[in-house]
Amino acid sequence: MDWSMRKKNRSDFQAQNAAIEMRQISYDRLTPKIRRGTSGRIVPHVAVPVKLHLKDIYRLLKNYFKNRFFDQVWVTAPLLVFVGIFQWWGLEHSWGAIGVTAIGFFAVTVGLMVLVEGLRVGVIPFGDAIGNTIPKKRALPFIVMIVFLLGVVVTFAEPTLALLLALAPLVAVEQAPYLYFLLNDGASMLGWVVGGSVGLGLVCGVIRFFRGWRIKPVILGALAFAVGMTIWAWLTPGVRGVVGFAWDCGAVVLGPVSVVLVLALGMGMVSAVARGREAVLGLGMILLAAIVSVMGVLGLALVTSMMVSQETIIAGAQVSKVVAVPLSWTHMTPSHEILLALRATLPAMLFLWIVAQLFLKEKFQESGMLIYGMVLSTLGLAILHVGLTFAYAHVGEGTSILDVKGLVGSSRFGTPMDLMMIGVIAGIIGFATALAEPGLNLLGTAIEGRTNGVIKKKKLSVVVALGAAFGTLIGVLNSVVPAVSFWVLVPVLSAMVLLTVFSSEEWVAIAYDGGG
Image 1: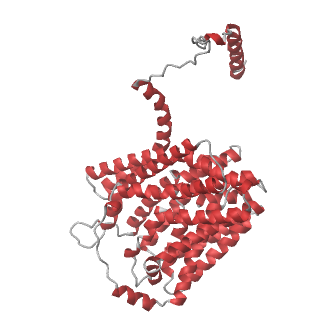
Image 2 (image 1 turned 90 degrees about the horizontal axis):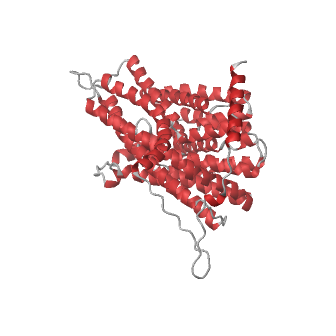
């Protein structure tokens, strides 16, 4: 008798013993006796409040926090070790600076744990419920309008995009005049163009859901326009500097909260519409929002180049003066990070809540869990931002300003091998950051469930993270050799087009939303 048979027989024997020893207990023994008052009516039973000691509370919460905390530790701990070694060996930082970095990584771990839990219990169910309800109660034109406005709201509320726009003082007007113009005089117009582009991309995704369009023609058409506009901008004098910025905008237009919200919204709509291949139709909105925003920024730069000359921009920049303004409390840690977290979570959630109350007349029974999830998401994002501030504050500055001893104005990292080492470090940071991305975790969970475990969440996350690592490495090298971006970007996009043509609909949808 083999082991499996012995195990089965033993289980049967245990089940038989359990059946033999089973006893029936009267329900009256489990409930208090009925008491009647002086009037003969039954007196309601008031249960004795359960008193929990600190030891009991610890036992209840230990496993709850343990599993969620160590899920994030597996992502942040290797990165902490690597960054710590680089600080000690490459940057020659003191143990105090390394300790600050360690504290920052601990805060990042806690922030990720709280953020993911908030998204799981609040944001995801809310987005899925809205997406499932709105097609049943409203027509397509109304849905298109709401989705477009949602895209504009989440774009203006996205802290990462605001930080990207804040790089205006670092742009040299002589090298990138039109980028300088867009980030300074044209900042307002740039914000509206990016917001409208994100809204338009989300609208295209929603229309695809309702019409049952295949995703490959939509993606190929969008990529063809994006690649064509990239080449056009690269060949236009003065607009070349906008190319990298435009693609960076496409990567940051949706943050961790808004990505999860849009994914949940799309999956909810698909469950209500149920046209075409449901496993594929729930994806694509993230990609279209990113691609259309890239085209929007490039289009704005090209139109600006036709209306304003480079000489005018350079002359205007030389006249203007930069006045140093002391930082207010809103730009200091931790108030700055808290405001960024509130900005990332509240506008989009409040917008959808207003839509649900005023237009859908929908009351959610789990409103308490929704508020709880929003609070956790905001708190987790704030802790995450504070942790990132402390974790990377010394690393970035030290890498850029460290000089060789005895030689003023030189850099320790001047040889190609040194630059490659910095690129590898950036790639590892990009890899770990992608693994910790809540949107990627949600996408992996959804894909694993819809494919019945054929596509594993861990494998999908690792593959996407490797792509993010390669992209981050190229981005760092581009900061030293600007021509790298074009000569790498165009071949990579061309390879993407070929892979898209020869891949199935399912893999195309998964790949592009994973990358988005």
